Image 1: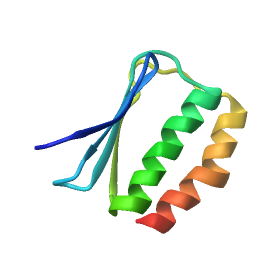
Image 2 (image 1 turned 180 degrees about the vertical axis):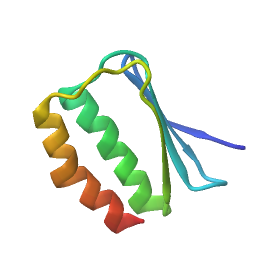
Image 3 (image 1 turned 90 degrees about the horizontal axis):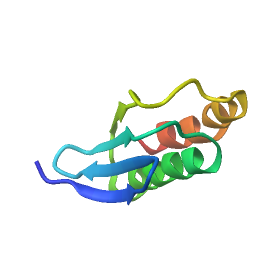
Length: 85
């Protein structure tokens, strides 16, 4: 299975698996705030640009989200990804 690295930093690696339409992230350490939102936004871009229809999350190295990030995800990110596919 081929994969394209979209984002790779101290917090997270984000890949796209074009053969299966999967956006996939793996957290390396606790992530919140703007880095968290940037990662989700880049994944949503992939849904919109390439027609991805699955998201695989490896959140083992993360912790509970601050309420502001959870609300942002529910209000902005989730509707965008759902609309895209």
